Image (cartoon, rainbow, N blue to C red; front, side, top):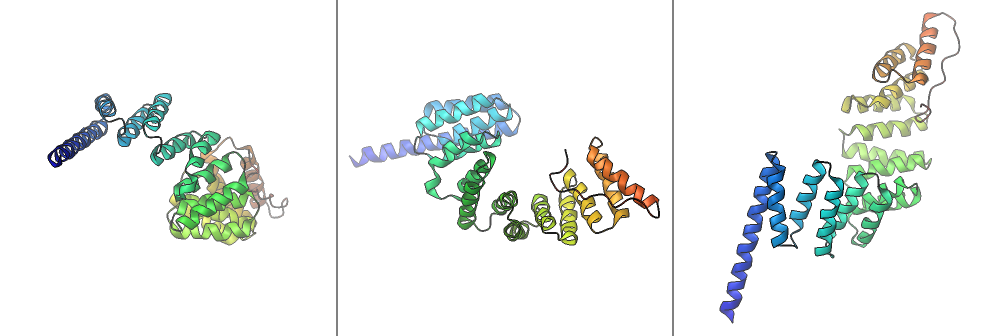
Length: 286
């Protein structure tokens, strides 16, 4: 009896080793841009070991890379059927729909494992609730995510943005300052912190944070405009003009920015001209 148990344990070990080898080879094929070879191996693993989570996830990723989204989802659902108690598939399927802005469908999956109190799940629920306009539920989940992992900067970014949308700018400031401390190189964290500072009328600090945002991400078009907006509030119109020129180079069809640029130019070109242009709030432009 003992010898039989040893044999089956050995056989199980050999099978696991073989599966691991096939997945490693499939990963190498994928990295070498040979997706068909990788898919063939992964299908073999799934047929042989239907409970192998890694094979389903990897195969779905390859389908996603090929933009075959329905096939990717079908593979993940197949994996869930073979592993109905697996948290992995609820997380991956929820993330799959979240990436496609299918917030209600993402909620369905993440809510099933909410009781596990995983930071990523709470954060994803916050993003999904925000996506369907349920800001208070979003805030609740993001707060739970922050409590579960107080060093996860993206949680504080999204939480701060939700607080801004709720009009709670002082609370947003505290949360977004923490986000910027946790990830000093996050352009989005600095941008959101600048938005909160601007909402509180702290234009010099907002200007400095917008500068950091474009340092981290020069393609952040809105930040270039917001730098000019802050400079207008600070009555530094000559500098604002230069930033408006940079912004209009990126977005030449923005009629509102073009109008502000003309007003600033007119003031700078005359000794006594019209009143300074009305600074624009973050969401006032088309």
